[in-house]
Length: 452
Ligand SMILES: *[C@@H]1O[C@H](CO)[C@@H](O)[C@H](O)[C@H]1NC(C)=O
Ligand SMILES: *[C@@H]1O[C@H](CO)[C@@H](O)[C@H](O)[C@H]1NC(C)=O
Ligand SMILES: *[C@@H]1O[C@H](CO)[C@@H](O)[C@H](O)[C@H]1NC(C)=O
Ligand SMILES: *[C@@H]1O[C@H](CO)[C@@H](O)[C@H](O)[C@H]1NC(C)=O
Ligand SMILES: *[C@@H]1O[C@H](CO)[C@@H](O)[C@H](O)[C@H]1NC(C)=O
Ligand SMILES: *[C@@H]1O[C@H](CO)[C@@H](O)[C@H](O)[C@H]1NC(C)=O
Ligand SMILES: *[C@@H]1O[C@H](CO)[C@@H](O)[C@H](O)[C@H]1NC(C)=O
Ligand SMILES: *[C@@H]1O[C@H](CO)[C@@H](O)[C@H](O)[C@H]1NC(C)=O
Image 1 (cartoon, rainbow, N blue to C red):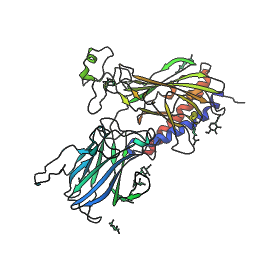
Image 2 (cartoon, rainbow, N blue to C red):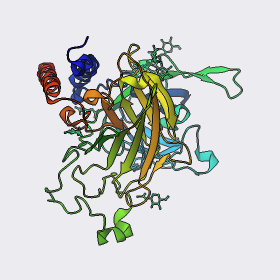
Image 3 (cartoon, rainbow, N blue to C red):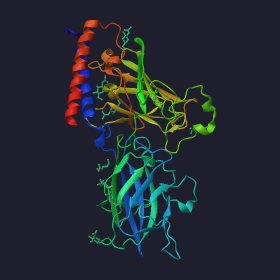
Image 4 (cartoon, helix red, strand yellow):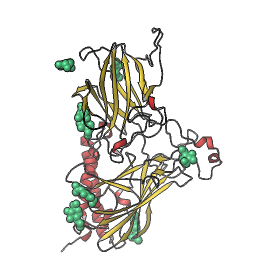
């Protein structure tokens, strides 16, 4: 019936690659994430009262991204005032620098800078310095993992700012650092005033004026080299396909010291050296891939109706405990994911027709923290997938993920021709399929060039 059984299954591969092509055509520069097309971080600036020389506003950072969070040491929000505004006081956050307030006598403002930088307060500040959703040390959860904590808020009292909705001016040039670059924020826009529900849920109040600013993340803007890679293995082939060499960097360009450390290096005994760097710069164990994170996908068991995958995430970074880590993986069989062990799971459906993307994260107090290298630096899970007779195959790498993200960063996958193959693939069939795959890859690359 099927002349080339191996190529019979190729339609799945073709559709997978077509989807990859769609993904590839979204270039990093345009900051559009095909797996989370509506993902952004919106700053909402609600004026809640006018004061004799300005206003009081509640500012909220609302994270709409399904799987990108902001980790410790947290966010820094900046803007440029349009006129001569000052910050009289803040609740739930603070300006990092007061600036020059010498023209004030008597009451001294909290901040007189033209371009203030605001940081969150740490948990545990006195109650009278808090507002709802403040004071988490700048940490913001992703919407997929913890929607209730996917926002931050603070209150600011602004002086010399105009005291009516016609005289007040919107701040300009919003910036969001995490702490480095990555987010690009658009202009402030006046929108429909926000509604607030009272604590007893029986009364709505309304902001006097509301501005939105939309910030979008891009790995390209973050100028980050890849931070994770993927390796493969399977029960049907002894070969372990490792992460591609130099996925995240190469060992031999040791121009700057501390490029990587050997597992048994005496350097690691120096505790000061392994405390977190303030810009979250990794200190990785020396490996051929040099990634702080490796995700291993093992095709473990084949049952009649089901098959089983084991996922292991390993931390090679001595400087980082990844709290609330997450991974996103894409596989055509995720539409029939029957059981997930030891991880939380949420199905992501960026496009209604494709239910092939899943978000996984750790279970609170069990494995939500991926400890630094040299300790228990790994977490594991197993997935049970129900076979779809139409598409299921162990051939041509079908059982491996099409795309993997760790904490929102795209991970480097082995090249398709390196995937573990079934032992009974004859060279002839292999050659044909391989040829087809090459053609598809070439097509993908050329059309990607066209998109540029
Ligand atoms: C930001 O995300 C929200 C929620 O997904 C969406 O309603 C809004 O249109 C997005 N804004 C932009 C500018 O993409
Ligand atoms: C200012 O507020 C008044 C009354 O609420 C409203 O009619 C007017 O449209 C507002 N003007 C602007 C520029 O928002
Ligand atoms: C805002 O940023 C743009 C581009 O960086 C710059 O040209 C402009 O002068 C800035 N505006 C203010 C008010 O700082
Ligand atoms: C502003 O925020 C509102 C309320 O969440 C949202 O519906 C709207 O899409 C946002 N507008 C822009 C331009 O992002
Ligand atoms: C990671 O967490 C452990 C236990 O809480 C702590 O001892 C260690 O210093 C942390 N490491 C880093 C790099 O933050
Ligand atoms: C997508 O697949 C998951 C896992 O099988 C299932 O729970 C979910 O209901 C599916 N969603 C849609 C929209 O089909
Ligand atoms: C797999 O999931 C799809 C869509 O969610 C469903 O139509 C199909 O029947 C499922 N297949 C099996 C074998 O359960
Ligand atoms: C296992 O897969 C590799 C490709 O990754 C292939 O070169 C090798 O021949 C396979 N081993 C067997 C026993 O088929």
